[in-house]
Image (cartoon, rainbow, N blue to C red; front, side, top):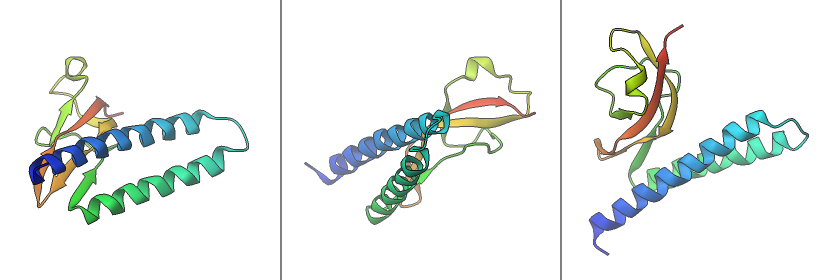
Length: 117
């Protein structure tokens, strides 16, 4: 593999792992049993490890949950057909993180927006 393809593979793997962690996090939030705390702790640890490992490889993951949306964010809006550009919008949920390497965006994030309440 060439160095650029190694980085592309790492970026794809990072994105998929991040998405899996976030999906599991939402599922745990809906759980109603005594195991919730230990699963939530494992998820926090796994996300911490992912962030650390990515940093070692020169990657930074950015999530925009609950932040104001501005058009220059390095993201694709998954529900752009449901929003009006004149509305004040916030990021309801980050579906895929924006990934930065060397100060440059190497993978655009993906988000869902909603009107600011």
